[in-house]
Amino acid sequence: MKTFAWWLSVACMVAIAGCKTADVTHAECAARVQTVGGAALSRAGQLTVRDHMRANTDGSYPVAIPRDRWHEPIRKLRPIRVYHDRLNLVIVLSETEHTETGVYVRNPIASYSDMDAIWSAERKALYNPDEEDVLKMLDRIESYNKRK
Picture 1: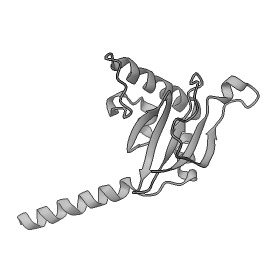
Picture 2 (picture 1 turned 90 degrees about the vertical axis):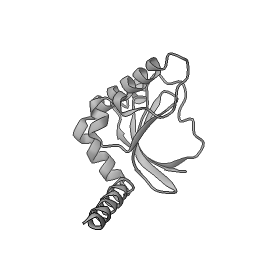
Picture 3 (picture 1 turned 120 degrees about the vertical axis):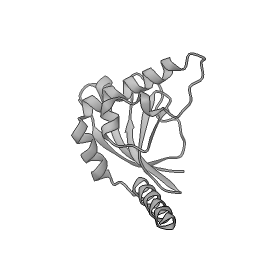
Picture 4 (picture 1 turned 120 degrees about the horizontal axis):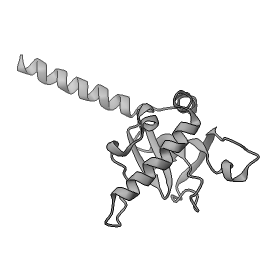
């Protein structure tokens, strides 16, 4: 009986790990963003980064953002992990040994675009509130595929 329980637990762990590393397509990213709403996710991204920065009063800003600082629209996306790229927010939805796929939330007050030189050109806009207003154009949400 103990052997069966052990094998069952191993099978469950493998299944869970397999779910976390499954590829997520642009269409799946778009569907997830649509369920929470682009404006709500954009605001949640800004608040999550702000709360994370404020919580680290010693001046250190770890890149990884703990789950307890994720705002509800981010949690609804069911991310594997969340981290910041300067003031922008990266929501990882799937990960393999060589790539990372998810949602990139640009903060309109960030004075830098993405920090990482290895971001791929495989980005597609998921939310752009007003293409006529330059400041609002900076408040974008994109799906991304990043090489590690």
